[in-house]
Amino acid sequence: MSIRPATHDDLAQITDLYNWAVDNTQALWVDDHVDVDNRAQWLRRSRAALVAYDEDVFLGYASYSDFRDFPGYRHTVENSIYVHPDAQGRGVGGELLQALVEVARSDDSVHTIIAAIEGENVASTSLHFRAGFEEVGFLREVGFLKGKWLDLRYMQLTL
Image (cartoon, rainbow, N blue to C red):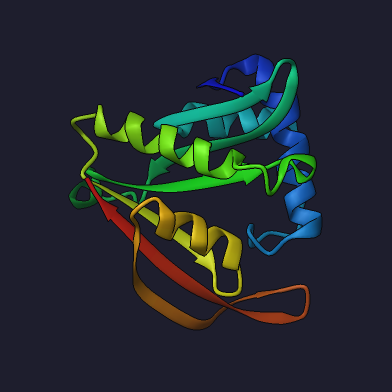
């Protein structure tokens, strides 16, 4: 597996995986698919974005961006990780998260990484615990998607 910074050439695969997550998970609290132009805007706004490949097979991506749009939060980022369904359970998420944390550690402007995880997402919660994140908050029924109230778990890693 190789992990590298995401480029415009990766946007079709990133878009497809994002849209798969919209349809099949509760990770994204949105109903609508996006297009490549939307993901190009996302890439420009991201402070870091990585992709994982096995040879030429896309495995997933991870990123971090501003946590909140106020100056006082400028040293805090929020991460996201998405693993292709065919690659889940093979350690891809852990490798992506580890690489993303290393990028953040080398960025003097980043002090804290926040993960906002749907309350029942055990895989993502476990992944973040293994990477050294700690749970710092749990909000009940703050989202509504596909006819269901969703909880939100906040996890944090201070670098």
